[in-house]
Image (cartoon, rainbow, N blue to C red; front, side):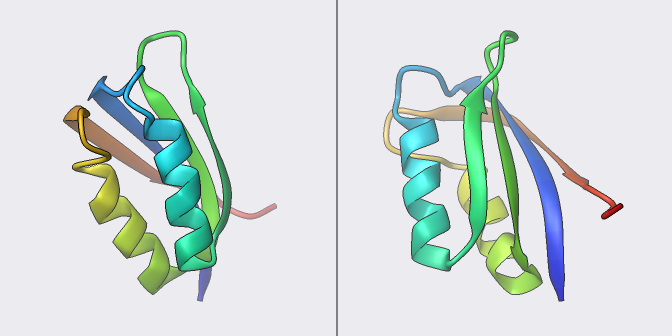
Length: 81
């Protein structure tokens, strides 16, 4: 089943390649999405795809790339209109 998630990652996630690495992870997993830095210092990942692949990405977001220090991850399922 395809789902759409917004994943917000807090901590030391700016300046460590988090956005770029998350995009690489999208491609690796066959997901469609985007990642952007937010004004409050977090990274917001907007992604959709199969549940099993989203679970792998969500788990990866809890650690991120080398140099990141993830403190909190919020996951919200987006209802399709």
